[in-house]
Length: 395
Image (cartoon, helix red, strand yellow):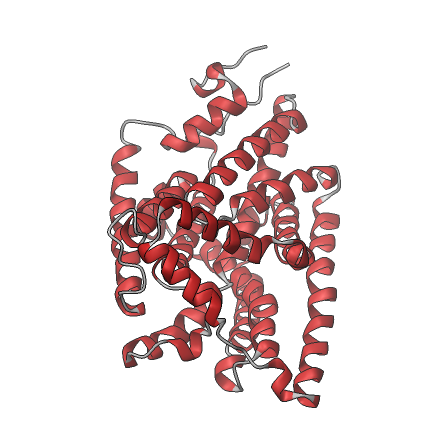
C-alpha cells in the first residue's frame, strides 16, 4: 500500500493557489485593521475621523470584509477533497493521515491564537475539518447540497427575522461601539505588559469563539468548507474551462447578487440587520464569484504567467498567514513598536499591501530552492513523517 505523502508541485492546481494568494491579501487587509485598532469593538462606519478613511472603509467593507474568509474556507474544503481523491487513486490511507494533519493544524492554531493574535482562523478550520471527515464518504453533489442548505436555511431565516425586527423596532438593531472593549484594547495593546496583552487576547478570542457564537461559526464556516469539499469532488475548477459561457452567466449573476447584499449597509442603513445580511449572505456570494472569476481567467496563459507570484504565495499560505500576524503584532503591540491606535485606516491598508508584495517576492525566491514553505514543511513532517517530506514513497 502506498503512503500518502504531500502533494507534489506537478500535481498542484494553479488556480487554487492563486485563490489562496488572493485570499491572503484580503485577509491581511482586514486583519491589519484589527492589528492597529480595536476593530472587534467599534462601529467601522462611524469610527474613522479622517475623510480618506471614511471614504475607504465602505470599499473594504463591501469587497473584502466577510468575502475572503468564506473563499479561504471553500479552498480549504476543496483541498481536502483533492487529498482524498489522490489517496484513493494511489491506494493510500486518507482518513488517518487527514486526522493527523488536522490535529497538527489545531495545535498550530492554538499557538497562533493564544500567543500571537486572537483573530485566528486555524482552530475553527481544524475543528470543522475534523467534523467534515465524517461526511467525506458522501458524493460531491451531496456535500454541495448539505453545505448550501446549511448556509441558506438558517442564514435566510435569521436575515428575515432581523429585517422584521428592524421594521418593528428600528432602535433595537442599532450598532453601538463597545466603549469598555475599546478602552481595554487600547490600554493592553498599546502600553500593557505581555501578561496584559495575553489576558486581552484571551478575552478577544472568547468574544468571537465563545459558546454563544458557536452556532453562527458552525453555519458560516462549516457550510463553506462543505461546499468547497463538494466542489472539489466534482472538480469544478478543472471543468470550468469546458463551459465558459455557462459559468460566465453564473458568475455575473452571483457577483451582482453578492454585490447588492454586501452594499445594503451603504445603500440603506448600517444596523445589525443589514450588516448581518451583508456578511452572512452577501459575503459567501461574493466569495463564490471571486472563485469562479479566478477559475475562468486562469485558462489564459498570460494570466497564469502574471499570477505565478500570487500562486507562490498561495503555496505557502500557512507561512504567510502566520508571519502576517507576527509582523502586524510586532508593529503595533507594546512589546514591539507600540503603534497601536496611532495610524489611520488608509495608512494601515497601504502597509498591508506593501508587506504582502514583499511576501510575494520572498515566496518566489524561497521556491527557487525549496519545495515547501517553512511552516508547511514542519506541518508535513509532523503529519507524514520524514520520508514523505523528502518525497519518498514507502510500501
